[in-house]
Image 1 (tube, one colour):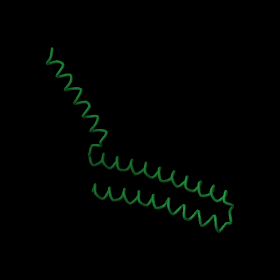
Image 2 (spheres, rainbow, N blue to C red):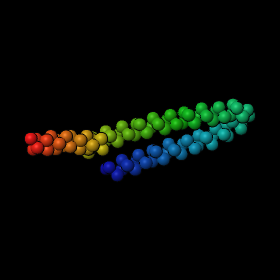
Image 3 (tube, rainbow, N blue to C red):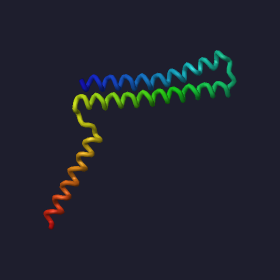
Image 4 (tube, helix red, strand yellow):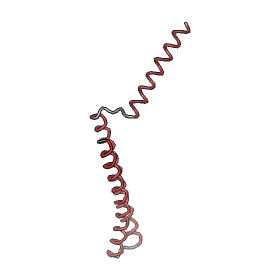
Length: 102
């Protein structure tokens, strides 16, 4: 199941990246066909690229949230949880060592 989640995430990320390239290509064609000035065309392309990046960022955030939810449902610890646990163990070990010294 985790493998299919990974594949889905990779496919979505790849699609988002490809969309950005396609957006720029599409915008270039539109500016030519609409006979925009160079300045108008650049502004149009910049705006579309910005919106594409915003969409890509939102999609990545959504994917991260979904993966985290899936991991929780599968009862798999996240890296953050493991790091927090390691820190707690270190603190307990240090307290134990301090008590042994006294």
